View 1 (cartoon, helix red, strand yellow):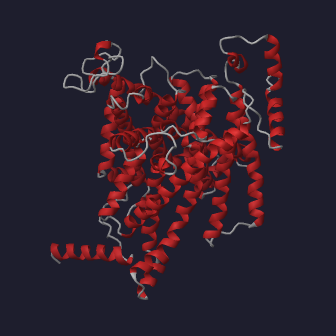
View 2 (cartoon, chains in turn orange, brown; view 1 turned 120 degrees about the horizontal axis):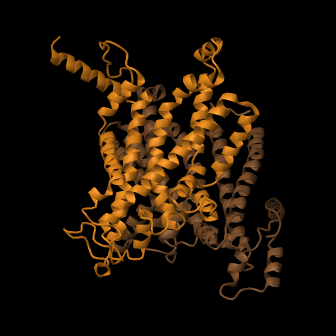
View 3 (cartoon, one colour; view 1 turned 90 degrees about the vertical axis):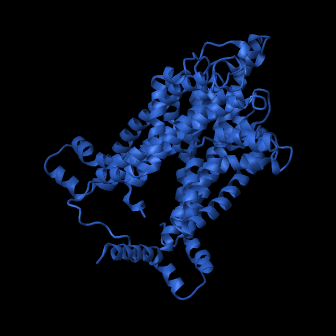
Length: 316
Length: 307
């Protein structure tokens, strides 16, 4: 059979596959060994443009958070001159000036640090809480599971932003970066807990767990070495997407006036200050909004691509 | 079925109690003395402060305050704010705004989301499919806050198609805020429908329907869609509660006098009774719609039986 004929056959098969569902695109079985989930996923990820867009954007914003000086084009965000108030963007000052006459590019760039720190810190707390509660409830079951699951239901019933507003206004955490991160985590850990719990329950009665137990492995060792690794893939996807969601939530809380406060530099504060000037100086809302959106998008795109790569059932 | 519903109803009681206590406790922990703040520039006399503290039960321990509050709640009395206004009045005045906003948002997400999802799902990997996939990824990534301002600036200020704030133009004033509120869910509905339709298009019963010569339209509308919509309908049901609770930002940006804005104003003014009242109400809606969805599952999908 010539290459052309083979290609035609493959083409026919694919065509038939979309209409009848009988034949699916043939799989290359000549490969030497079966790939593991992770190398298989990486192979998939490599060819996903969404992943690369997200990864490059994420890297840029990470650098922006670490060394903002490089991106600010030599301007100091706090060196302001009132005579420049609300100037439009120019070749010299790409993002123009804000109401106080501060270089806006520098301000927007320096805002990345707080957003990323809060996103990463909050997701860390969520992971710790989610893994701990999820693993314990799923593994031990019984009364403890019932109690903690009902507790989860209670937190789950309070709308996320609303809960965070009340926590921050109550002030027992203060109003700094850590406070905002913890407030977001307090009402954000339940999904991670349910994810871990369901994975633990799904595999805890499998044969290899029984085998490990028969060989005398302790509960802790079974949980950490044999059960929790199963939850890594879904938790990784969830974590990546959640960082994006948390960054958006931080900006929202700060915009509403319960998050970070001046003199902190934050996109939420910039959008909030620009709101009343929307008619005359739309660039004050526009630029922080664009950068905020791109940051959130970077993490959600990476998470989406990861999910496609790690879940073989979703592949066409 | 009846027993299942009854059991679920019973299970929601501790959730409601716990959630309202959670909010109550945190509001109670608010710093500052709300009674003193009431006096403004002129400090109130100690006797008046003492009387007001007594009246609002501010001297009791937290749990006692909460139990007293619950006792009133059961009698339909949600308490008054510090200016003597009934919380129930505030809610009944503000709630219609939030309900209208939610109705508009749900309609938008249902109609546009399902149509886009079906168009994408029946021809997988086609142009429309990729368009829906890419645009839904983008829409999901744009924070509501940003979307609200973009909508307000472009569609409201630049083009002048929609009112920028307030509710002076009837249902029409809810269209843009509704669209903003619905956007995220809209993208999710489109994706859910797409996946579900694409899966069902390959199912045996669809092939059978086709093989017996039914027109494509009938196959898609009567066979594929009906089965594909089960997860979509349940998502939309649960989303009603989420949207009502998530309307704070939308109501703030577009200046709609709904319960979301009321919560926000009351948190700032340390009006504990108002916050607890409204949040409990929103939690109730959230739990209620989730319950409805669970029951709906059993009705829509006969393979699921609850006993």
